[in-house]
Length: 347
Image (cartoon, rainbow, N blue to C red):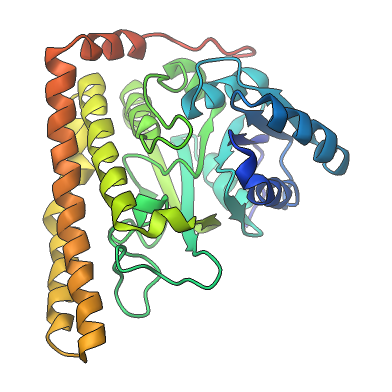
């Protein structure tokens, strides 16, 4: 692989002390990439204790690391925008605080930027289950495969995404990168969207990618599955309750994106997913349920139920969010905010 001529800043955003070990590992795997990042930034989201500990314990061992506090609205979008104001590299790469990058991850992302038509590049995320636990029944998966239809629920690459490098509508937030010039032109992340603490909202990266594609007709956003991170899955995300909560939040978030960017662009990928990927998985699980012994039959039936529940609750969340945003004041506020540009230095 020919080394990219682009400089890169890797950004990790964190809000809780509970992920200290995972966050430290994420930063170390980023710092030891080949090529190494030109900048490494930790943004702490309104947690002074975490900021102080990071300054005292992480910076001495990672000389390239800079630690800053979120200076904008509380939440992941505000933290990411704080990072955009602090870095100066050609490419800004975002890595979740509970995701560890494989060797070669950064180089595989950056290689695509040698094509001037590429706006952004994202990689894949493999779930790392809690110690002693395997894949839960709430996230069904074909035998021998590593991707399930609902793995997006835990922030990982899901069945239906490309198996080889290909253009996509949007990237996954745990493993994504953008040209800094693109972020400057479109104004950064919409701070009315995105996760705040443990509230499982999202889609800020979807909305940003749609804005970027609209601003640069004929350009592309690329998914590179060989740029791999391992995304830790906490025990609380293996439950039926989390599946319901996360899917409902996804529906709410998609409704907000539809208000900001229009229903056609907000739901283009989701329509194909709902009409092809989910039915295929449902047929697989129901077919398998009539064959094996009782214990396995139960697992496949629960997998089928998870697929139906996930789609139904996501749809319900979307309908609920659409009504709330379009008849209330929230929709107008979101649309106004979508036009607020984040002014970046050096662009």
